[in-house]
Image (cartoon, rainbow, N blue to C red):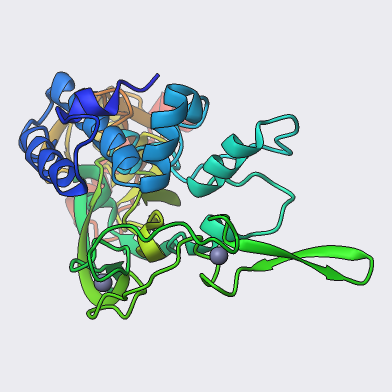
Length: 376
Ligand SMILES: [Zn+2]
Ligand SMILES: [Zn+2]
């Protein structure tokens, strides 16, 4: 259940958009994970603040909350409501879509409200508020296994629609939401008879926005959005798996006329590594070990993914192809502080440059009784 968003942000029920924005910015700075590393309370607060702002910044969501309270978000708040979904669940594939199915029997007003949130109700035509939601953006990056071990940041620069700062995205000269369009009663679509069918088409008076703007904002010409180049720092968490899709809710293209922004997705690929093969959280590395060490036992030095050198005991009689396990030197796991294991894949190069003395010693060994029987 969401907490009361007004209480979370510490603003009055009738707070202006500006007051809400200010309160949000103050709190989001205070609880930002970068400033509160590992602080679970701050992380929780950060999520609450973002959830609250996600509702109150959007006139439709705010109106729905005022009318229906939490019921307007029942079952839905796990989806789009948290704009930092990717950060909160870095290991999930992040990109989950909320589908309400047919939505049969649901109150029409609530259905319309849900449309405003960008939820896919299934079946029906895309119209009104849905059509104005900003588009999702997708980028792709390939990182090294070492970066996947430590975690990294990917900076993306792209040109996209951003909310017009002059009109708060409403497209109006006074920066407030325009009154409801009277022709379509704010739904953004009108019915027109086409032969046997009644078709729904975007309302020509308000271009499907549901709000009729009398005096347009001079900066964005009433669109509520501007083309701008944005820079986004996407945090790639330590231990990320190949093919993970990270989602940054609300960081996509801005919606028109105050509609919600789309989401930003980043597909992360991991380049093959020369030294380490990955198997889930475990790593496998192939190491050449002299025959004598395998036969007599000894110690070998092994490189780790985090640039350390490990001294590993090799038991006498270790076979080629055997794997020695070193605990905790694999990749970071989902469990905080957890790591997979490192497996040393034993390889044995056969010596090709032997001195006369070495040849003699080996020949002598080959001539011994047990060696003649097959050495084992
Ligand atoms: Zn209209
Ligand atoms: Zn504007």
